[in-house]
View (spheres, rainbow, N blue to C red):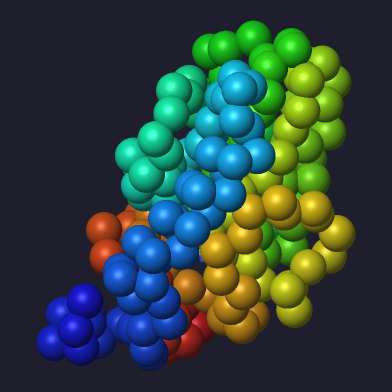
Length: 183
Ligand code: 5GP
């Protein structure tokens, strides 16, 4: 995306479409190597992970299964509380399966930490996390992220699946939303 595509609501672009594509390809090679000879179920967390899931899944040169989970984390529009409600549960039984959770972004880590506990209670063979973005300065709980795309500053970002009030999800890269939009 070049700067002429930027809506005035973005302060700046952070990660370009090209950078995302290249990083997802590297992550896919690592995932292929780690799960060689094993079954693999990708679980995307709706709605933000739709783009990561679509691009990562097509990068993987092997069989995979895909499922989706939708959760809502109570909190303000830009901060989660860790109190999570399931809006759409998995269609798949994950007992005995190798599950890879595909996330758009890990901010406080509270949503994912809840999800990991929830999944662990279903008896999977393994559960790992793949996240395109991570904000280390925002972490409230430690999460082991086996496949992490980019570490970004503690700003509210949009694009590539990430929204603000359901907008900006279709931006091809990730950018920092200008504070004036939500302040
Ligand atoms: P956490 O529980 O780690 O604080 O946040 C989890 C969810 O909050 C993410 O999956 C994402 O949907 C949303 N989120 C966290 N940070 C951002 C951000 O900078 N931009 C947007 N659009 N959503 C975010």
